[in-house]
Image (cartoon, rainbow, N blue to C red; front, side, top):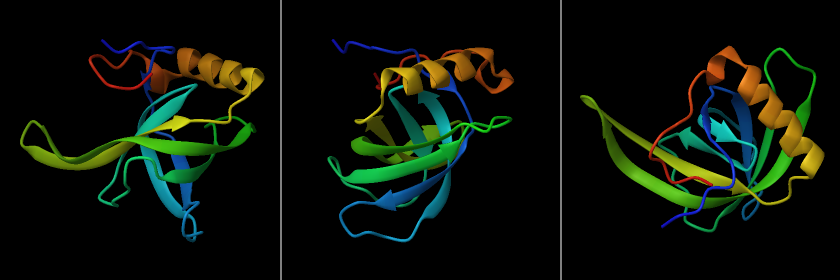
Length: 124
């Protein structure tokens, strides 16, 4: 059984993603959900388990910006949501500091975007 360290919340946050391996140009994406320790992104872009990415984002209605190294821990090539087939990937932030996690946690708990926890998902 999986142990969770943080509660994930629904959160649509614009982010920039850069591949550490091939030093790609920043790609704009949006999170589906987030916790202080990682995020899930719906995307047709293909990353492999273990890929390292740089995640950059500013919390909406805030001047707090973040840049984290993230590791891909889940890849969903196709999954169903009703009649829609979607793709995506989940990452774990590997270099967050306690005060950064606290800021993100506070934002997610207070945000109207994060009005309910995400249930039965993989992320810690």
